[in-house]
Every structure is written in C-alpha cells, then in structure tokens.
Image (cartoon, rainbow, N blue to C red; front, side, top):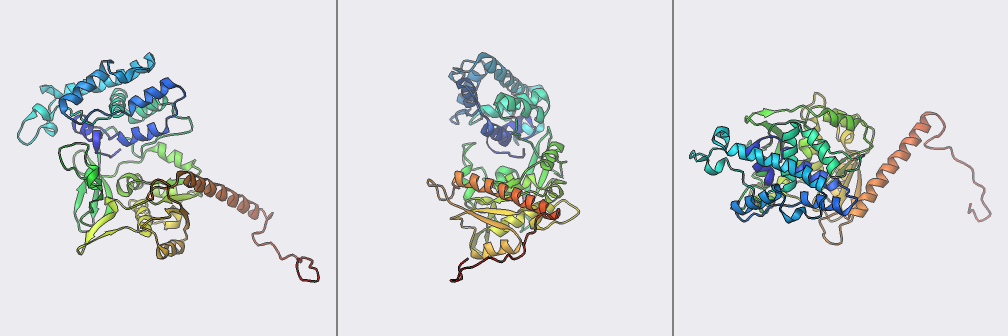
Amino acid sequence: ISDNGGSSKEIIRVLGGPAIGDVRARLIRLAAPHTPEEDAGLSLLKLRLPSSSRSDAKTEFTRYVDGTHEAWVGIPEAYKQTVRAFLVNFYHHCLRRESVQELSVDVVNVHGEHDLAAHFDYRGGSIGNFVFTGARLFFGSLEAAIFWFSNLAGIPRASFVVPVINVNSKVTLGVKLRNGQEIVGQENISHPFQGADPMGTKATASVPLPAAIERVFYVSEHGTEVLPPVNPALMGHLQACQAVVYTMGSLYTSIIPSLVCKGVGPAIAALEVPKIFILNGSPDREIMWEEDGGVYHMMVEDAVRAVCDALNQNEDCTHSPREYITHVFYLQSSPMVDAEQLQALVELGLATVEIPSSDNHRHYYDDRMLVKAIRSTLEGWEVFNRCEQLKRRNELSVFPPAVSVPRNKTGVP
C-alpha cells in the first residue's frame, strides 16, 4: 500500500490515503467470474482512461459516472448501480477538493496557482482504482473495501488479499543507499518520472541507481520515518499457513516492504513450513547500481541476504537465512546465478531448484513447471514431516539396519 506510481500517485496527491493500486491488481488477478455478466463487470474494473489530454480523460470518466459509457453494456443492473455508487462517491470527493474551501497547501504549486493543482488529473487513470477508492472513502476502512471488492469480483472464499499494514492514511516508501543518499517514493526508487506522460515512467526501470540499496523504511505523510504496526490479520494468516512464498516482484518496493514491519521476522522464523524464495528472471533498477565507472547487479546470494536482513531489521533478535528461507527457485537462464552462487546457497543450508524458461520469453518462468515445483516441494515437505513424526514415536528409523539379502552363485541378489 506504499505504491505511489500511476493513477495511485494522483489519488494520493489529491485525496490522500494509502495507495491501493497493488491491492486492486491482486484482487482482480484472483477474481473468478462464473458468468458472462460477471466477466463483463471484471473487464470494466481493468479499464484505463486515455492519456491524451486532461479534458478528454475527464470527459470519458464522467460517462462512466453517469452510466452512459459503452463499457456498461452487458453488465447486470444491480452490479452496475453498486459500482456506479462508489464511482460517484470518488468523483464527489474529487470535486470537493477542487472547491476553494477545500484547498490546502499540499495541492498548491510553488507559484500559488491552484487552478489545476487542486483538480484531479484523470489521464491514464484506472477505473478499478477509482471504484476501490470510492469504496474505501465510503467505508472509512481499507479492509472493509477489500472485503466488499472481494465479493464483487467473485474471489474464492479460500483466497485472501491482506495488507501488511492497515492504515487509512498516506504511507510512503524510502530507501537509504550505501553512499548515504536517501530516495523517497516507490516511483522514484523503481522508475523515476521522465517526460510529459504521467503513466510513462517504466522506461527508466533499467537505469541503475547511483549506489546499492542498504535498507528500506516507511515515511509518514508528514515526511518523518515511521514503523507502522503490522496488521494483526496478517499474523493470523501466517500462523495458519502451509508455506511462505517470496514471489517474483520488485525486491525493494514490493517484497521487502512487507517484511520490515516489526513481528513479521520472528513469525516467519517460527514456522515449520517450506519457505520458498523465487528469484526474479532478470535484474531491474532496484538491484542495479553504478560503482567505479561500472554497472553492477545483485546475485542470488545477495538477494537472499537482502530478504533476511529485512526480516531482522526491526527485531531484537537475529535469525539465520535458513530460518527464513528453505528453498530458492531460480530461472535456468538467470544472469544472477552461477556455480559459485549455488555453492554459497548450499553452504547456507538452502535447497536450490532450477526452473526452465517460458517458450515465449527467456526471462520468464515456465508457469506450469513453476507450479509443479511448488507443489512437489509442499508434498515432499509433508512426507518428510510424517516420517519425522513416526521417527519420534520409534516406529521408523531414518537409517534402517542392514538386511542380509540372499544371493545366487553369480553374486547377483
């Protein structure tokens, strides 16, 4: 909930509150529509407004609000009016911020010109983000909005999207580099803004940082470093989980922010379950840096240690890598893995699993093989635990005694 890029950035600038883009994206990925009507409703939440001009984007958005947009065709009336209600609520809050009475210092630019600064810029905006924000503002609760959205999107009952921190105010990410420099804002860390297009920041995702990242921290809406309390709901899910998977994603702005909250490290270390780290298919800006005239990137051991350091960062005790990670999955063609790196992981007590690349992209995992590897790891862990339980009951010995096997004259058993 600290993502400040894309349309989340504009929502935070004008309306405040936590970033909801990543939460909304995960909810939509888990959605399981059962009818053409539900599928049409889900498709609506994936749509974005044009990036051409402010006026064109706002004009198109008002057609969503008043129900005349063609995207509403095929959506059941009850579903339509429910979603529209939250779009109207979102639009209402945007209009209030445009009024003179609602203006505040944070939306007035350096020249004091508030004619556009207070106006919401709808360009490239996600309809799903607008609906979700309207729900959050109505309920006054991020978790209540997630609960409503989960039911709207038809997410299976056994699937949950849980924010690591449950706040209703703005929280921003910051990182400290090894050269002492600090960068605040997920967008500035991952892909700094360049050019006129508010959505066109991805082009800078491969530009290396001036130095390697040393640590991640949270920044309050007042600009001070804070350590938000972990969401109790997350701790409950952790205690009941079958496995922990640190999946693909931006290491310092997607994965590690979920790990630095106090209490997460000890909770994961205490679990006797598989803890799988899936290495990214290729390096990105967050793990690339300039040094002595060259460009360097993390290797797999560096990434593993970064995860473990984050889990230990705000705790009173220190746990070993083996207590946080049991298996490392890596791509067959990964530039971050070599024989020396694999040996280093073995010395840390970690199992390594090589996954083939997708037929369509050498830096993407073959998703079927990845799922198969995860399933095999879970099943193997379960069998191992059963054997251990039997061993403790003296019903099975790990190393059974030698058995004399009769042999024929040729010496073959």
